[in-house]
Length: 49
Image (tube, rainbow, N blue to C red; front, side, top):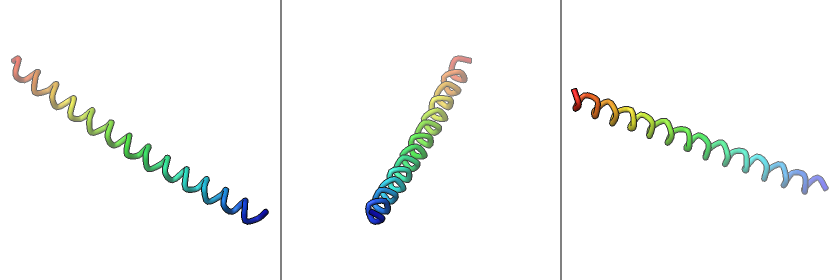
């Protein structure tokens, strides 16, 4: 019984770790794409002037 709880705990930890890493990667990708979009908008704005 104790070994089953240990396996469940390890699987939970691995799932949380994977979710945290994927969330961090998603946030990083969203922020970088937002910066690229702002840069493109700024370039278009300067070209129109």
